[in-house]
Amino acid sequence: MYLKSINLKGFKSFASSTTLNFEQGITCVVGPNGSGKSNVVDALSWVMGEQGAKSLRGGKMEDVIFAGTSGRAPLGRAEVSVTIDNADGVLPIDFSEVTITRVLFRNGSSEYLLNGETTRLLDIQELLSDSGIGREMHVIVGQGQLDAILLANPEERRAFIEEAAGVLKHRKRKEKAIRKLDSMQTNLARIQDLTVELRRQLRPLGKQAEVARKASVIQSDVRDSKLRLLADDLTRMRSEMEVEVADENVLRERKEQVERELNTARSREIELDAIAASENPQLIAAQENFYRLTAQREQIRGVQNLSSERARFLAEEAEEAKAIGRDPKALEDEALVLRQEESTLASQVKLSQEQLQVDSNSLKAIEEQLALEENRVSASLRAIADQREGTARQEGHINGLRSRIDATTGEITRLTTAKDSAEGRLRGYRESFALIETQISSLTATEPSLDNQFNKLKGDLKSAEAELKVLTDKLQSTEKLRAGSLGRLSAFTEITELVAASQNANLIEKISVLKSNCEAEVAKVSADCDRIKFELTTSQSGFNTINREYEIALSKLNDSDAAMTGLAEQLAVAGQNVKNTGEELDRLISALDAANEQRTFDERDLAAAIAQFESHQTPLEPDLTHLEDLRSQVSR
Image (cartoon, rainbow, N blue to C red; front, side, top):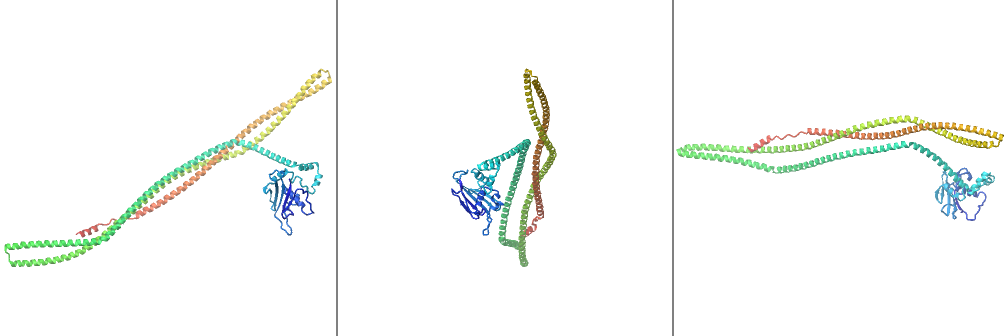
């Protein structure tokens, strides 16, 4: 492994991109003052992660960017790339060449690249630490650092040696591991506290979960019930709509049938009117001829009858005259009388003919009046038929409006019942909501006292536990002292028995004094032990009492939390019920208002239709008396 090349661009005095290739065998770079040797070294230190601007002979990190000259503008970034030959695999990376790049911008942002890929400074430091190079490995020894190494004290020299020997990375890893362990210990303590807290809340949370499950089931039931009600309403409305549509279809078909029949009747009427209009002159002419011929026939028949009577009378007179032999002169006189009568009859016939002409003219006028009267009667009858048809349509419209008003009234009744029920449920839900809020307020008011009592007992329990631990440790140490004293006393007793046989009074006296002192010590330690046991028993009793009170306070606090949680769930359910019922009530009120408005419109339309129906006067039946008189006059 060796340094293969370095590329500088915008770093200090290297404004243009400059590449220095280091072949194997190159051991140094020489040059006059100001040629940039130190800048190359600074570039190496900077690209390996140097963070101190003073180590790079600058005031701030942006000073490493080319600041410009009188003939060249300053640059906005500095970039240094170092290429290391890794053919021997010293660096733990699967590349034969490793290029490390560092880029710095004037806004202060920077980035590191490893073989063109963005990476972290920590990764680069870890990569270089195993090779013995890096910014803290004393690979680069600057000016003044040699004196610092030579004049260093043993501790500083040890640090230099450790860094040069590669121990630094292990020490850094150790420090990092220790920091992680400390952080883990802190997290573990926090987890233990959380575990204790969660264990304390486990039972209330279980109750809350049970309440939540019940609330979920209730909400699901409520939702299913609402859906079922809506489905029932939808089915009912669809059936009503189908019935209305069927009735409407029947009425529409009936209307179309009546219109077809009406059109057929009108067409037939128009056809008959046309036929009557075309044949009316012929009828009038035929009637005139019939009347005239009838009159002539009657006249001729009358003349014939008169002539027959006259001939018969003359024949009778002639026979009578022959029989009685009347005078011819008398006969002439009688003939003259008869001629006079004949002339009188002729004049009467003439007058009759004139009267016949007058009567014919009168008959013609009467027949014209008859035709006019028949036309008037036909028009009246057609008007009556039209009026009856319009009346039927108007009655059908009025009946339809009445049916719709009845249906709307039934819907209004149903909506009113549903609205009253929703208002009752809403009042109940609101009362329940207010009651739960009151219970929550009372629990909230008692919560601080329970917390204070719990915290106080918790502190007292810790103090009692600490005191109990101290007394236990003290008892153990005292019992150890008593055991030692008893051992010494036993040894002195055996020594006393052995010394008693030697008859050495001085030694026996010394042993007796030591034994007496040991017995006094044993008595004192036993008394201390008994006292500590008594204190320990008292402390244990106090600890048990405090522990029971602590458990009671904890149970009360848990019960309070559980009750609070249950009330909170009930409050949420009640609030949701209030909201849902309020929305349902709003929908019912809107539907009720719409139904009332629809009924008002229908009632107004019904009133208008009834008024229009009543305002239409039914045409009177035509007076046929004049028509019959005219017909009788024509028949005469």
